Amino acid sequence: MYEKMNKFIKTTSLGCSGPMLPVHYLGKTEVILGHKNKRYKINTRWSQADVARYPVNNCHEMVQDKKGRILLLTDETRNNVLIYDKNGKILDSWGTEYPGAHGFTLFHENGEDMLFICDNNRHQVIKTTIDGRVLMTLDYPKEAGIYTKAEEYVPTETAIAPNGDIYVADGYGKDYVIQYNHKGEYIRHFGGKGDTPAHLSNAHGICVDLRDKANPCLMVTSRVQNAFKRYDLAGNT
Image 1 (cartoon, rainbow, N blue to C red):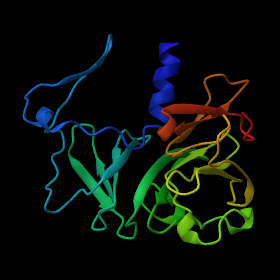
Image 2: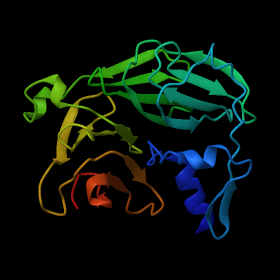
Image 3: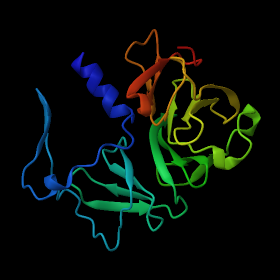
């Protein structure tokens, strides 16, 4: 069970905007966080990047590619993506066009690492290669009939199903989950604001849970409710 959970955590990005450390932690030389045998020491000097050359503004998410490199997403348009090795050495950077960079999903397609970036300011979801080449841009889903303008749609995270279907959580907009096929063609939407268990309130994070191979499902955070909501891949609770 531990190996399954560890793999699940490494290959998903549900906690796309983790809690900030209280100020009183920052002056301590050693801080241990965690519970029981999952305890971790904070290394506040891990990053070796020159902050003047590689600034960070609102780091919302980090992922690790198949080469073991760590990619950090920031909405700083001088370098939206910073690439580190495991020891915190800066290797590369790219991206100047994502002022509202928020969600950052890594997935494998035909053996290659791919990325999805949710941009709050652009009201778009952008698929890129691992080095930043844009492959697809998803605008607000006007075909769904639930939005009257792009500004109502503020995506915060994506998840990719084994068949390539794309799920976008509109966590800062109307709280719908929008499902597309691998070509970016609209399939359906579900969730949204409301009072039933199927509804969401601040649908901030989303991931595909593949631990039960026979019954894959979606897990969506409903932050205002302090809850996780579980759906099948067709959006049923």
